[in-house]
Every structure is written in C-alpha cells, then in structure tokens.
Length: 234
Image (tube, rainbow, N blue to C red; front, side):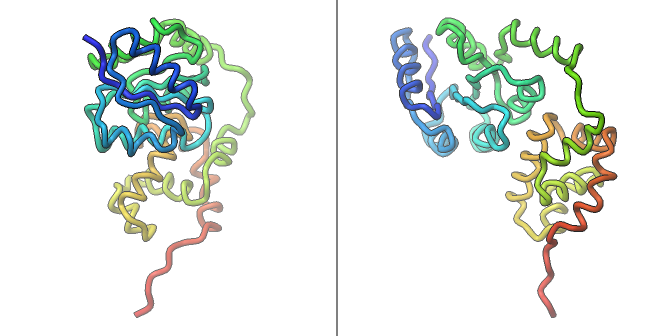
C-alpha cells in the first residue's frame, strides 16, 4: 500500500519532481512545498504518515529545527531527511532531532521509496553504505585541532553556552527557563540547538562531551561575559 506523504525541499522544482515520481509509483502525496523552513507548520496541519525533508545544508545550525517541532507536535509522523552526505555528527544531529531516516540526495527513486516504507513501519531508514562511511570516519577520523573544546565553544552563541552549563549542572527545562528569564518553550528550543550543534542525542551526552573536551572550563568566562536576565526591581 502506498505511503501518505509530504515532500518538502528548499528547491521547489526538486520537491515537485520528487512528488511526481512518487505519485507515479502509487504513493499519495499530500503536498510538495518549499522552502523547508516552513515545513513544520504545514506537516503538522496535514499530518502525513511520512515527511520527506530535503536539505542542501545538513551541517548548518537550525537545519533540523522543523524536525524537532514536527516530532514534538505530531510524534506519529516519520521524517526522512534527503541530503548530501554529512559528517557522522551531522547524521547524529538528524536522528537527535527525531528523524527516522537519512537518504543521500543522489539516491535512486527506488532507494528513496524503500526509506519511506521503512520509516512508516517504524524502522530506521539509513542506507548501509551511508552507515559504513560514517563508521569509517569515526574509526579513522581526520586530524582535528588539538583544542576540541575551543572549537565546539565557537559553534555556540553565548546564550547557548549558558544553557549548556545549566544542562551540565543538572537543571531541567523549568529551571533553565526560570534561571534565564525565558519561557520553557524557548529553553527547550535552546537545548535542542545545543544538542544538534554538538552532534549528540541527549543532555547527558552533551554534558559528558563538554566535560571531556574542557568546554565547561572555557565556558565560565564566556558565560560571565554574556548578558544576563535582570530581575524587576521591587
């Protein structure tokens, strides 16, 4: 039985071409839309079985924010990312956001179709070759700068650094929001951005990575320099 799906991509022509190809193969395409930045609201309102989310920039911060929102508000919707081969951390970021699969953007339509079917069935949809490449890079990493903590710190905004420090201190979303003077929903968004930028799947992993690389030691001065929330005067 065909999959009830939506196709979203930054390039409308690509979205429409994919939609047409999948329709010809017997799938029910509810919509083909662009840009991907507006995917969340559209997917939430139409509630497909699967969303095929195309992106040309999987490594950029915020790319997988729509996935986070979709999974929060429509957890039954499976999201399959279609994009270039990122680093292992990039693949981890997609899955950390809640994606059910990752497919290369040069995959044949048969491969895309298999990924959609697997995602609808609740299975992880990742091509073996993609996993093999990721594992190969993890086992034989390219030379990295000696100071990984500094490199990671440069990826975060001052506010995200403060969030990471609070996460490492064991604060939950409510405490983070209260301590920073922001709404809980905003705190959750900051936490998700930190996880995606660090390429980890949980708060515990983020805290462990920050501690292992010395990021927390460097975060102190940055956090103090960042503007802090002010309490109303009594």
